[in-house]
Each structure stands twice: as structure tokens, then as C-alpha cells.
Length: 112
Image (cartoon, rainbow, N blue to C red; front, side, top):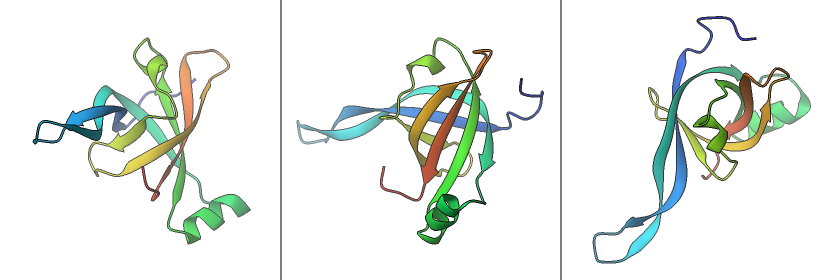
């Protein structure tokens, strides 16, 4: 179980959706669907993490509370840090053993 006070990042989760282009058509875009508090652990060690960082990518593990809203999140969505504006690609979503939390593996510095 996550300790109180460790979910200190406010994250927004955006779903891919068509958006009006201002000329009567539509283009690919994003619609914010879920906002929640999360804990972020920045990965630093290991060969894969080091190779990603050399390529300008930052892998992270994100912990969020499980709810009906967060259960909708899929790897096709993107994640945004609302304070810094950093965008992350979601790579995987795994429920915790007690099903109270989700752990997401994500990566910044790649085209979303």
C-alpha cells in the first residue's frame, strides 16, 4: 500500500479523439478524461533505463489509485504532468496485488 503523502504529482490522462480544425474538418487530437494524484518513480539504473536516458527518454513508474475512472486508462492514452507540462507515453498498466492501485510504466521524450 502506498503511504499517505507519496501521491504528490497531479497528472492528467488524455484520450485520443478527433478535434475540430477550425476549417470545418477534424484532425487527430487529445481530450482530457481523467485527472488524479500520483506518485512518480524516475528510473535511473539498469541497461535499458540508461540506454533510454542517453536517447533523451525518461522512463518512469507511476502509481495511481484504482477507481472506475482510472480503470478506463489504456496504453493508447497519454499522460501529462499538469505542473511541468511534460507528456508521457503509457507503455503498460498493472494492478497492484491488492487491486487498490495501478502501476503504469511510461516514458517521456518520445513522440506521443
